[in-house]
Length: 161
Image 1 (cartoon, rainbow, N blue to C red):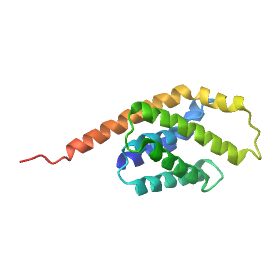
Image 2 (image 1 turned 60 degrees about the horizontal axis):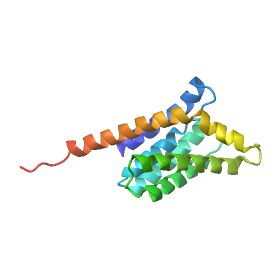
Image 3 (image 1 turned 60 degrees about the vertical axis):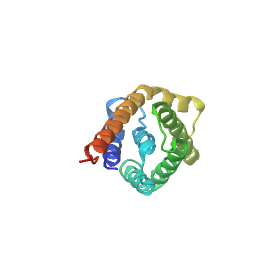
Image 4 (image 1 turned 90 degrees about the horizontal axis):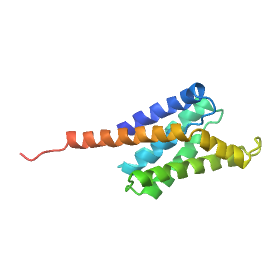
């Protein structure tokens, strides 16, 4: 769980840095952590709580809403845990990540359609522009998460005397 929280913190910070450095890029880094971490969750309640808390932190820091992303990330966490069911290999986790991105975009469009105009070209353009950076970040998070979990499991494993 410590690795998940650290990756959540890094992802929330990078969500503002990357669009300022790389123009026209929409990162989905927090969703990446949700997808990767849900494959190996031991305590569902703690995972749901951390997803909600970091969604609220994201809202308070970067948007003018208070609980919108908290509930969106909570729903995405539930969806990811349902889809992966603690049996997430690389390909299944990668597909889950893109399903969560599309679900996130549809939810955000649903809540903002009254004061923004969208067309399908805009949505596809958002996905296409950030595809490479999101895939690279997914690979980094997936490898980091699995290596740290492997090290922690083997480091604290009791050996027979």
